[in-house]
Length: 70
Image (tube, rainbow, N blue to C red; front, side):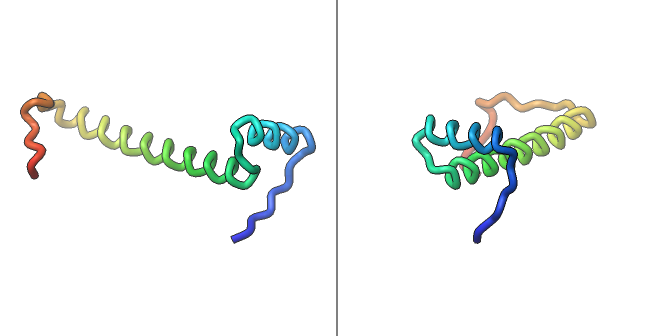
């Protein structure tokens, strides 16, 4: 898929320099950055849900008591 993006010249220059600094082409830099942001947002949502569940039931289980064979 091809996506077109309009940027002010200053932003385009910043994006290109950042990609170059990280030895990536512009497309790969933008792709990795967007995927990283999506992952961070997803992780934050999971954290918020877990925190709400903890507020309702603040029971915790020590790590050594967790059976990893399930």
